[in-house]
Image 1: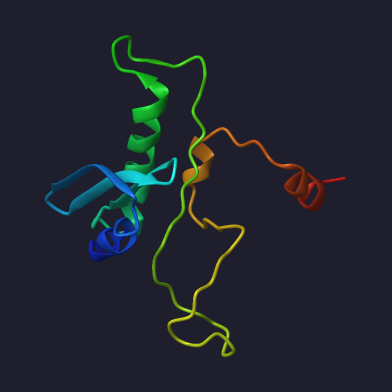
Image 2 (image 1 turned 30 degrees about the vertical axis):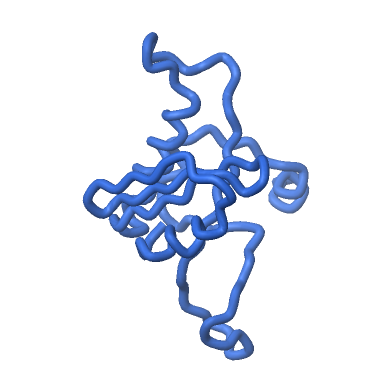
Length: 128
């Protein structure tokens, strides 16, 4: 969600474009790869403000704007972040691709969200 050029790098693989939008630093391309609808977004506002964008994306699919209420059936979104980061391990060379299963927030942001732990989290983090 950082470098605006990444949007074009991903969306060049679309089979069909639905739309392309740009307003200031925000760039969004929505289209299809096969039958899968995908939106690629670059915010340009930095990681410290990314929660604003994620909340807005959630609102777009889960809020009824006519009634201003949460929809009875929530839409689950799969969000994939493509970006750069540093590495503390010497065995991971520069320009490597790394896929993680979890992210760690060391701020207090998650205190403002309902948290539902999966089975793995319940098992490893339960207090006896």
